[in-house]
Length: 234
Image (cartoon, rainbow, N blue to C red; front, side):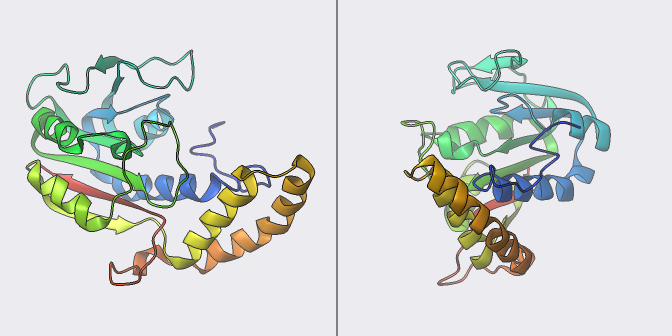
């Protein structure tokens, strides 16, 4: 599968993206046994996980939804449906599951989106989500939030969701790896310096990732996280 969101390899050229994509994919793999039947991909972009989900889950109908004026990542891939950010073009209780990866940080009013997700899910339906914490400004000016687990919990509860489970995609070591990758690949510097520093940084980044144990992260005072993922039920 030639898909850099699924077939993820660490190179000197993707040190900024490697950990975040690996952690999102790992979170998806943990959740995929719970996905089934009709699935809604919110803020779907180019739907990088579509093929993997259809091949490795009980999902038999994958529907991609994006905002009408969404940033286009691939001109050849179009969402199945678009919406105006206020009301999704679906009947109540249309889907057994839904997911949104790295979407909620772009929502000016996240509860508008979350309440719509809640509405179109069937009773006991599952919502899977990921959000970044350490990430550069992107899709400016439509980069709205960096969530803590506590604010995310409140937004989900206010939107009607229950049985909310939120976990970290990475802790202190992964946070350092993520920041180092972003610095070496995205901060202003000459191409020559970037290439040299990327080669030097790669083994350090891989070592830090190896040290990290995101499953042991507790949301306490002083904790560092790379991002969050989780599930919630209707």
